[in-house]
Length: 193
Length: 155
Image: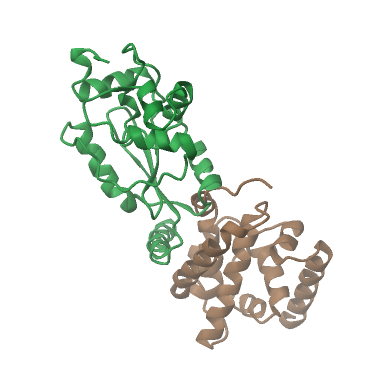
């Protein structure tokens, strides 16, 4: 009985996707830092949940802010999983995934789009991100935008440091930020900005 | 209004009950199709659902409608029965009896739904009323009329 229901649920998800009823698809994938939650809309990747973030809370938040039609559907996140695996193996320096920016608006979104253009293995300061987003004096707001990044890792907020070169903060914890920067070969030479 | 939970939660919590009810109502063959139709209809309507306090009753109401559609489409009576052993394995499902289920199926839709929700899904009266979108008194009346008719027919 349970097996029959599971099979029916799988077919239901495929049909829901075909009929445009799957607004948010999500999957949990492994990473060197622990499980990541990946979520996408028809437009693109909308949310990456880091291992220290509560999965159920993230899903409830997606249901409230994007659409309650949220279904677990690993097939829909296969490309994102593959790219992240390559990134963690040091074999990918630029993600090709389409992104859905809808969870950030206004100045925050401009900051995050600027962050998305920081090349692999380089770092920038919060001040510079504020300037690129159009308001050089809004350094604190730029920091908040980094902290609220809904698509960490792929939108590389770990590449943003304090002006003196101090690490600043990271939603996934500072050890993870440090590990990502050394994966990209930045930290060994010491942040130079 | 509180926000609706992610639909995955609804599936996790209620897909087993919906499948069990559908197997009872249309048999193993039809249940898979009705299951798909039930949840696709639910997904379509879900974002506009105003009251999420009785998601199971809401889903079972849709499932009953799909089961009725299935019978209409198939144009056959009485209801094909699920494998009794399988039904007995589901918590709270009564031992199926071919004559009884056929009689339940022959009831007018409201009475049929009330009886099935009360004895098939073990819903309390208040939830049956919510599922049928009627007052508790009306739900109790439908249930009462349905049971009276069943007693009469089954003697």
